[in-house]
Length: 166
Image 1: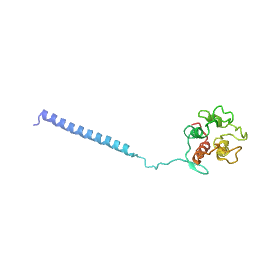
Image 2: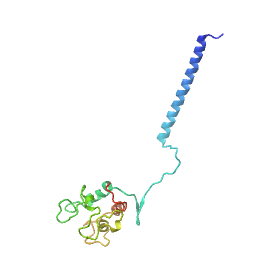
Image 3: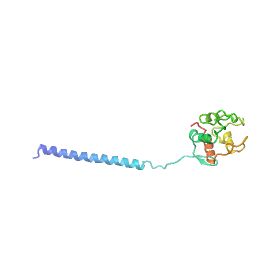
Image 4: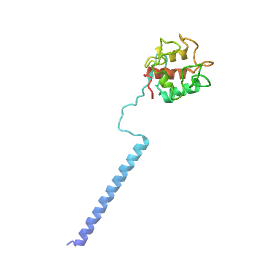
């Protein structure tokens, strides 16, 4: 005949084994989650796609005004006495904080038949025309130099994407 102490001890041993197995299982699950998250394993097998804006001449991604377009103006246009606040010779202020409101859907002072930036239409935007020199009134900008093709494409893409103030 089995004693009560023996049965209690046997149940306690079985309980410990069960708990040990559960803890090991939990550890294995946690370890697998860590491994999968560190290696980039995902349940989805769908291929990742990238989106790009295609223009008639080049393919590039659309930048933002603050991060991509304004730095071009700051470094190449709003310098010295050109396109800065208070310039008596150049009426268009392209300094940071002023440029967007001075060009977005604003009629050009040099060619009143055009707007500096026509949202989604670089071809009719006077700013883009001045940068490329195609059919421009006056001289191509910037004076005394030119922007790189990448810089011009950045401005073109931004205009063609709607010229957002972002």
